[in-house]
Image (cartoon, rainbow, N blue to C red; front, side, top):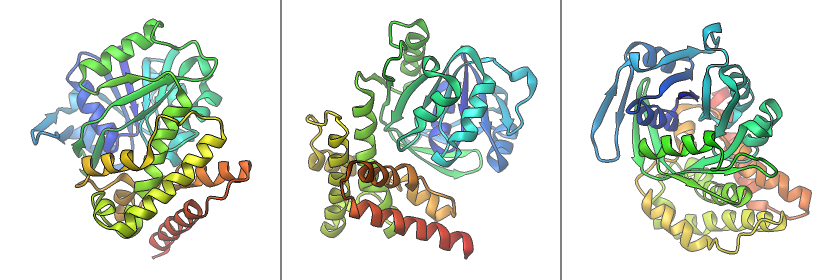
Length: 317
């Protein structure tokens, strides 16, 4: 099997390191200093257990923006791991790299990524996905896996991509032997909304306040705002007809905050590095869908505005 990882940031690095210990061929699609480091010195990953793994650059082929012709139509699977604002460009890269029957999976934060991939590749070549693994970049070619989680996958509506398909079965087996803990979900919308609820509760507030996840639990004022943002999104999901009856917001938020107390969430990492965030595909999606349904989402709108303000001040400052 040949696997492409498109966007090798924190989570992409965890995937690359996990797959590097198997016998699959790897293509890493990255750019800038990260691409240069992956091609010249490889990847250093500090695991959850504190072990340091050094994966040599000869373990993969690195492509930086311009994909060379020998890589056209060569990959069986493409994992889209880049930031949400890079999805259109990564969808084009996936189209170039994938075989005619290859599968693309987005494990990015937020909503709408699978639909963008479908527009480029067709529903028969796309799985919905998300991940609860946590990681952070320490520099070019260096990352830290800060929390074990799972890779959750689901077929899109009216898609025939199920575990009965050999391609999907092989993919699930690869994730299993790689230690990435695959979970097959039977309700795509429920899976994506559950992840979004956690993201809108934690990421914007942590980024705005400059705190690790545990502070949102330790400080009652922040915890109340996090839960309120989550409940707004819950209302929108329910109005869309998604069955959220088995998702209890408050205990689930507490569980995640306790499990990731020492983590700097991805949005905080982006703000600290002066990068664009994924706020549009998180709170922005809640606001947009709420407006379509006539459901007010004032807190998500406020968080969206504040994070966009931070982005603007960072860019202009």
